[in-house]
Image (tube, rainbow, N blue to C red):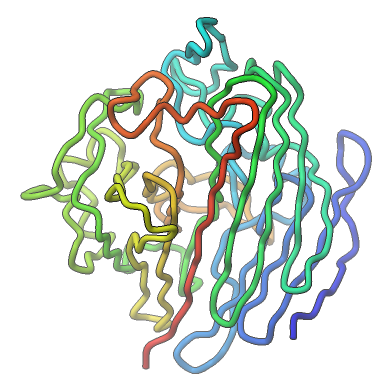
Length: 343
């Protein structure tokens, strides 16, 4: 049985209010905001059965709007980077909002993470919806999005459907920062990744080539301490891991990506997704962001696992398609986060 506990709304400094609700199935629980479809809290049990929050968040709408780390939010209309903020669809060139070096990152300056979503209830979770107008951050077409967060046993399911009335690239991802033991660092977490391919990139994070993880620090087929990545040659330009792994091309709806774990708490999290790639980000530039309790968050305090379409896909279709969604077609993202605990 899933219980719903509405929380007192927050004031939005731009006007109006932000809805908040806690959904609890007795095993895991999440707190969801109508701002950015943010997961503010996610409670899972440790090896002793004690539940605690494992994601980073903020105390107010103002704090969320003041940070650019996309804490817990849905990134879109296109997650990750589009080079030079430009792409061509149906023979027409489009200029997007540029907000990171020369790129459009996570949808631009006023992306989906800053929008107010409509929030409704499902039997086992919540459904959020958003309409992004034609020309929003430069993206063509009216984009209609439906997002479900559902709890089933020790699993969090995230399912997103989107459509557009003009051809447009769409890539949406859940951008939670996971810390499985409540410490101020995730460097003692271990990450295991099934994928054996990743995207090499230039100095501003745009993909340049498809590479093998073999004989590199990106080969994490065996559990690898995040601490061991610091200083590795592959991660010096990005001050830590901030790399995109490609999933094997398959007709399977969900494929296993890998598992993040903490020996301190015994918690583990395994990600399954139908998306063609997963960006792994080690919170390399999180320092100074204000989190809960008005505490300044730390570099490497958490790990993001971001299932998504391939970065810069509209300009690089050779890697895994162009991510363009045409009128009448449906974008479909489904990911499953399975939580466990080891003695």
